[in-house]
Length: 358
Image (cartoon, rainbow, N blue to C red; front, side):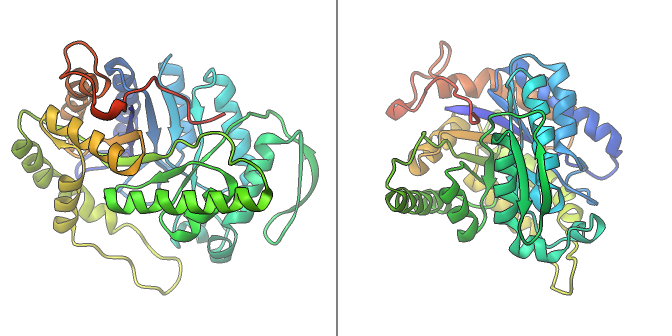
C-alpha cells in the first residue's frame, strides 16, 4: 500500500484563513515525519470549504520544508487556468523538489470561478479534453503550439520541461473515458464508496483496452489510480465516529454552501448530517485496526493500492497533528507488515512505494 494525506485547508468557524494555510504546511511536515508516502493539496476559490486557491504555491512552500515525502495537487483546476502556464509551474516543482512532485488536474465545476478568471462556462462544458491535451503537450514536447477552439497561439519553446504524467480527477463516465483514452491515472473522490470506485476502474480498463486494440499497441506502463478517503483514528471506532459527527458538520455546512454556480442552475445541496454519516461508514474512521482493515478492504475490492486521507475532520490543529502521528505510529505499520504491526497485510497488497508520475 501507498498512503498519503489529502490537505484541503479546511476553514472551521472562527479560524483565520492565513493561519489555516500555515497549519496546512505544518501538516505536510508532520506527515513526512510520521512516515506517509505523500501529501496532496486541493485547490478551491472563494469558499471556506478549502482556503487554498493555489495548490502549486502551497506545494512549493512544503517542498522547501521537507526532503523525502512525495507532493501532489489534488487537484489543480484546469478549467480556470491556462494549460501551458500550469505545465510551467508543474515543471518547476518537479525540478525544484528533486522529482517529488505529481500533478493532479480536474475539470472543476460550473462555479463563479469561471466568471472571475474569465475562462467561461463554454470551456468548462466543452474544453476539458482540449485543455488536457495541451497540458500533456506542454509537459512532453520541446515546442508547443495550439490551433483549437479555446487555445490558439504560435509555436513556442517549453522551458522548463518535465516528464510528468498527470492524474485526472474522475467524477463522471466522460472523465473516466478521457483519462483511459490518454492512459492517465484516475483520482477518485471522497463521495463514492468501494462499489463505485470498482465500477470506475472497470470502466477505465474496458476503455483503455479498446483504445489499445484500436491503436494496435499494448496499453503501456502500469497505471496507479489514487483513492481519496476520510481518515480519523481514535482508541475505538465508536469514539472516532462520534468525534467526526460532532465536528465535521461545523465545517461542511458553510463550506459546501460556498459552491456558487456561474449561471442560473440550482446550487447543489446535500444533507450534511447524512453525508458525514456516509463518510464515517465507508472510510477509515475508527480504531487503528479498523482503519487498516478499511484501507486494505478498499484495495482488495477496487484494485487501488494508493489511498490519500483527509485528516482535518476534527477541526482543531493540535488534534489533527495527533491524528497524523497516530496514523503513522499505529496504522501504517499494519498496512506495511512492519515490526510492531499485526503481521503482513492479507493478499500480498503491501509493496514498496512507487511514484505516480514519470
